[in-house]
Amino acid sequence: MVMEVTARVPDADVWLQDFHAGGRAAMADLYHDHFATVAAAVGRVVDGADKETVIHEVFFKLISSADERRRFQGGSFGAWITTVARNHAIDHARRRGRELATPAEALGEHVGATTRANEAAGARVLVERFRDGLPEKWRPVFDLCFLGQVPQRDAAASLGMARTTLAYQAHQIRVRLRAFLVPRKEPP
Image 1 (cartoon, helix red, strand yellow):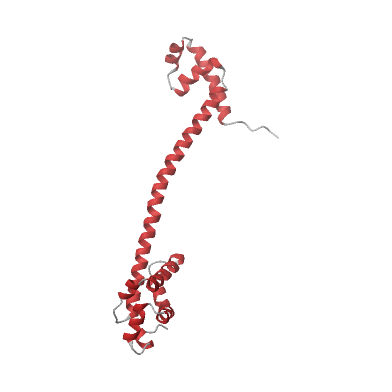
Image 2 (cartoon, rainbow, N blue to C red):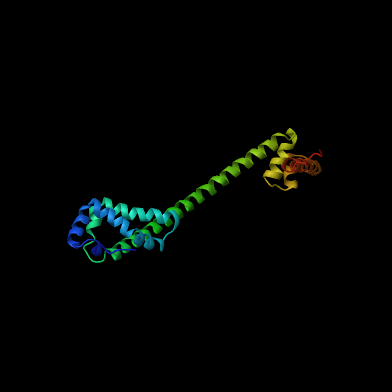
């Protein structure tokens, strides 16, 4: 049951002065009498751990800040603290939304760029490892036809070899590349 401050303390002015001063008894009564009110107001905006955090932040702010306590000048304390709690919960939810959105987007861009760079570096290492495993005389064919995507006729002319010789080497390179990329499983 939520009690009104004026019902608990016969002289509201004395209570208000004690509240503004941050008196220990006033703060303890405030917490006990209005915890459920604050929890209900906050629970309409956030839930779970965020709800608990906001509830305790509201009370911490009231206990630790004389300026915050002075904002209450009388009237219905329950209505005032409900408004304070709801506004704090809304601010918390907005802050939390910005914290989650901004870093995730920035992180996503960074991770995406880093992943692409890592993939490219990994691909270069694989290509170099494959190329180093080829016979020396086939490497120029690999460089022109596979990496440079030069047509076989132009590559053969550029290398000064017959097109059929180049076609044979390109076929052998393709066979080795397939075996390199998709190794066959040996039967047990």
